[in-house]
Length: 288
Picture 1 (cartoon, rainbow, N blue to C red):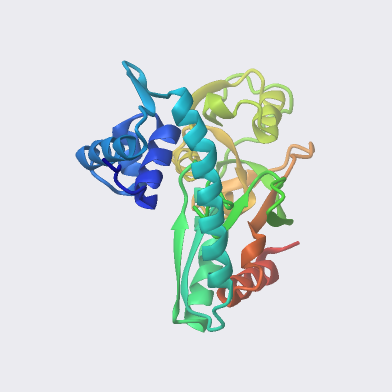
Picture 2: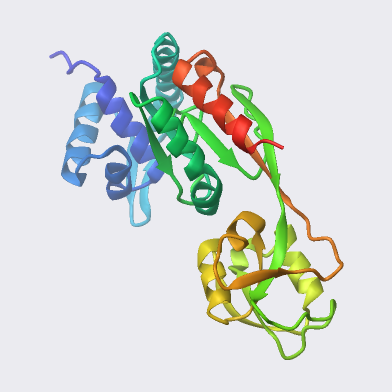
């Protein structure tokens, strides 16, 4: 009896399960239901005549046969995505969708005005803006353009430094200017401990080492609002702090490091008109 033919859509299901580890997470990843994912996986295993995953209490673990299939499936995926990118790059009108990933504060305070201008100039184009903390993959076409705080080292990505964003210490308007290296009796609003190694976080620790950390967050817009409500001194990117009513920058005569932002896109899209138009506008409006 012949086995069912191998279906590429089943390979997409297989890749999602291999990467996410559970049916539920894989289903959310590709927009399917969990029962559908289980049914498609069983169909694939039947087509190949091999069990591809061990079902454990902690999730799905690849068998040896599953590991072999993973290597081939990733090559098929890479070729499929490359074909999609090259075909998309052949479109000459400035229309269609662009998916951009960046930090939430950068999107709100720096990128939003540029995207608004882009939409007015090119009404047939549309932009999907992703601002969660996850690093979206350009090679896998999870995003068409990414703006982030570290350089791009992927060989298939064209990237450049876009801008150095200055930072400053902020406090509610009228607050006393503290002494650098002290901070006793003061409260500060800080980044979440997961970001403890960032240069701006380390600077605040040196500037006000005796201050009490009264509030922490991984969201800079929230920190700015807490500062405005009197929760404490905080370090913010100037575009965020300067746009927040009720707070003002304080100069402690100690330079505060800025943060570089880098912009990148997949090299296969370098001739895509809508991407080139948006890239040129972002660079013209925001680059140093």
